[in-house]
Amino acid sequence: MNKSDLIDVIAADAGITKVAAKKALDAFLGNVTKTLKKGNKVTLVGFGTFSVSKRSAREGINPQTKAKIKIPAKKVAKFKPGAELSDAVK
Image (cartoon, rainbow, N blue to C red):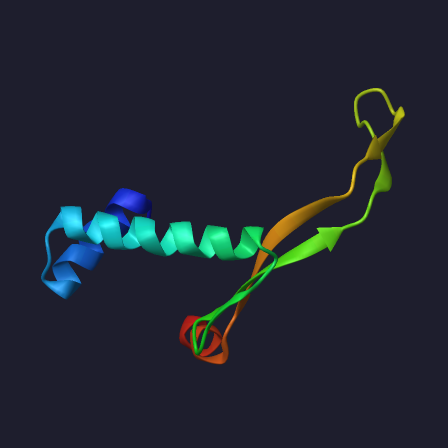
């Protein structure tokens, strides 16, 4: 399912227009992004938790040349599913 498919399903399930569903989805995604940029987490009980994790710098190997390269430290977004979501997928 891609974003436009999700918008169609949200609109149908909620009985709203696709424009309203797109605005709601964009607002949700925008606010999750803003919260993660601040270093905070978003917890949706039963669904899961979006958070930011730090990856430390490390040394890697270029698979083509076998040369060692330095991989810089960075922050990454991660998602941990909640119990209800995990149980529903089983």
